[in-house]
Length: 190
Image 1 (spheres, rainbow, N blue to C red):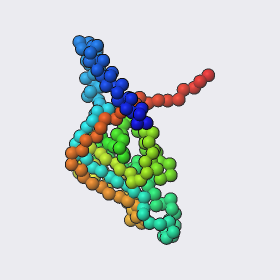
Image 2: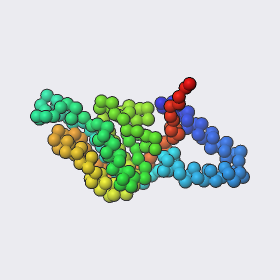
Image 3: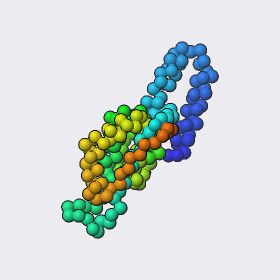
Image 4: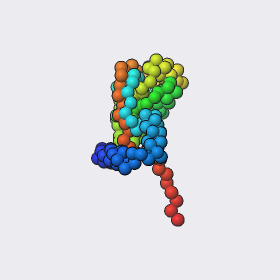
């Protein structure tokens, strides 16, 4: 994945260079380039920076041998819906850009867990899971605090000791997303 991302970044730089060299006076290219530049921060294809809020979710540290009645070992791990609840709350709170772990979140990003690992854009991550959003940190924190799904997770934080930390960060820089932003779909072969 890292090799392919490096190759994609090199090819994007080459495309940018050739576009500037070949069509400096082409109005159509200028309009398309301006539109792409305007949409790039939102689409995640350009680096951004600003104040950020970081939310960290982690598996419980307690042993599965001394569980309270009605609690299973599965209740001691962070699940897909927990990470997704934080992501959704941050978007609702006005997040301008987001990262999960070291990956920039874009429209085609999907939070998927297998067991207690997270699969994001072809990479596998173990907890703790870190979600960071750039935006008005007070509004982001309020959105996380008010989210009903996050509140359920926080009940489990209290009940079994799942990890939870919310930190306001100063100016934070997110790199540009370097993967493909074009959705792909299966096609029927006849």
